[in-house]
Length: 143
Image (cartoon, rainbow, N blue to C red; front, top):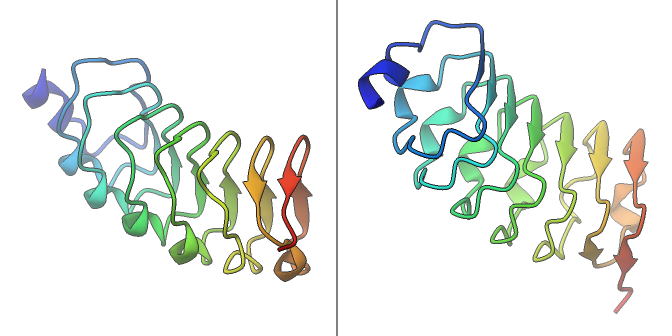
């Protein structure tokens, strides 16, 4: 399976969601649009910084998102082990729906579209430059 997936590195759009046996995606960093939602066995996402639109919903092993700082459109919703998103300030479209351990969003003020549905975040005053902000069912702490 690994060899078959790594041979797809030149594909423009690739949807591998719910492919439970995929472990290594390091060769897919040049795919433009990539969906890896529900791929629970992937441990290393660091080589995917060249992807333009990346969807990794419900990936339990995703903790470090520092490699995604140059992704244009990033959906990491329901990745509950993510804590620090401070380095994602250059992402243009960011979906953090259901990321219950993300509290500090102060460095995300230059994002064009930010979805914080169901999150529990600290003060959102730094988000005044965000053009599209979704804070549905979002608990905001001001202390």
